[in-house]
Amino acid sequence: MTDNRTWLITGAGGMLAQDVLARLAAAGIPAVAATRAELDITDPASVREALAAHHPAVVVNCAAWTAVDDAESREDEALRINGDGPRHLAEACHELDAVLLHVSTDYVFPGDADKPYAEDAPTGPRSAYGRTKLAGEQAVLSTLPDSGFVVRTAWLYGAGGGNFVRTMIKLEAVKDTLDVVDDQRGQPTWTVDLADRLVLLGQAALAGTAPAGVYHGTSSGETTWFGFAREIFRLLGADVARVRPTTSAAFARPAPRPAYSVLGHDRWQQAGIDPIRDWSEGLSSAMPVLRAESQEGNP
Ligand SMILES: NC(=O)c1ccc[n+]([C@@H]2O[C@H](COP(=O)([O-])OP(=O)(O)OC[C@H]3O[C@@H](n4cnc5c(N)ncnc54)[C@H](OP(=O)(O)O)[C@@H]3O)[C@@H](O)[C@H]2O)c1
Figure 1: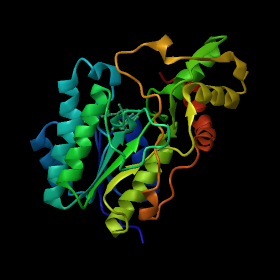
Figure 2 (figure 1 turned 120 degrees about the vertical axis):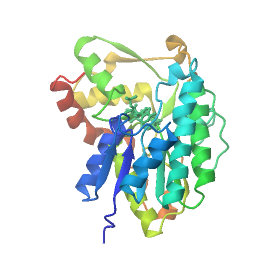
Figure 3 (figure 1 turned 90 degrees about the vertical axis):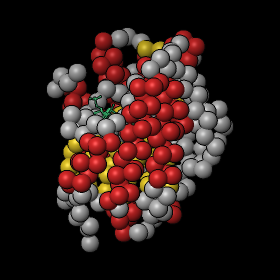
Figure 4 (figure 1 turned 30 degrees about the horizontal axis):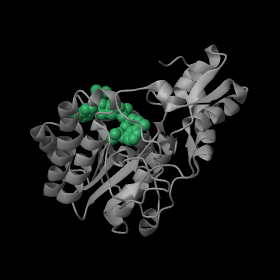
C-alpha cells in the first residue's frame, strides 16, 4: 500500500524539482512545492517554520547553486546554498523525524578514474562547486545517519530548464556543423528517470527497506558529450556527421570539467530498486517531450 504522507520539495521552480512533483502527483502522494521565494534554505528559521507547518514525512532537496563556473569566483555564496542549506534542512528533519533525500553531483569526485566510481569511493572535488556540494553531503550524512539519503546525479536534462539536449535541438536547426567535446565521459540522465528513482527511494525509506547513505542517480552506460550529441542528432533525423569531435582544450572554462565522471550503481540493490536504465533509452523516451517543448518556443 502506498504511504500517502506529505512530501516537501525545495527549489520547486528548478528543472529536477518539476519532474519530482509530477511523479509524486502521478503516484497520488501529496506534496508541498516550496520555491525559493517560499522557502530559502539558507535561512534556518524559514526552514524550521516550513517544515513545522507542513510536517512532511520526506523532504527532497532540489534547491542548489548550480552555476558551476560562477562558483569559482563566488564560492562563499555557493557554500551558503550548497553546504549550509542542506545542513539546516537536515537539522529540521532530525527534529521532526523526517527522511531527507538530498541531490548531489558527480563533481564531488576528482574525475580521473578509469572505472566507475563506487558510492563509497574517496571523494576529491576539483572545483569550487564540487567542494560546496561535498560540504552539503557531509552535513546530511552526519546529521541524519539513519534517515539521510544523498543521491548523486550528473549530466541532467529535462523539460523544465536549460540543458544540453535543448541546446542541441536549437543548434541543429541553425548550424551546418557543430564541434562537441569527445574527451569527457559521463552518463546523460533524464530528470524524469531520476525523479522516478527519488520517489521509489523515499517510499522505500519510509517502509524501512532502504539503508540510508549514498546512492548514484545517473543513467547506466556511458558516453562522451560528442556521443550524446550524435545520438540527439540521430533521433532528430539529422545527419550525425554534422557533429564533429573536439577536445576540452577548445572550450576553456573557469571550472575544470572531470574527464571521467562515470558512477557505479551497486547500492540500489540494497534498497531493492533497479538503477536507472541506459542513457540512450532514457534519451529516446525524452526526445519527443523535449522536441515538443522546443516547438512551443520555450526559451
Ligand atoms: N543540472 C545538472 O546537470 C546537474 C548535474 C549534477 C547534479 N545536479 C544537482 O541536481 C539538483 C537539481 O539541479 P537542477 O538542474 O534541477 O537545478 P536548477 O534547475 O538550477 O534548480 C535549482 C533551484 O534551486 C533554487 N534555489 C537556489 N538557491 C536557493 C535557496 N537558497 N533556497 C531555495 N531554493 C534555492 C533555484 O531558484 P532560483 O532559480 O530562484 O535561483 C532553482 O529553482 C541540484 O542539487 C544540482 O546540484 C544537477
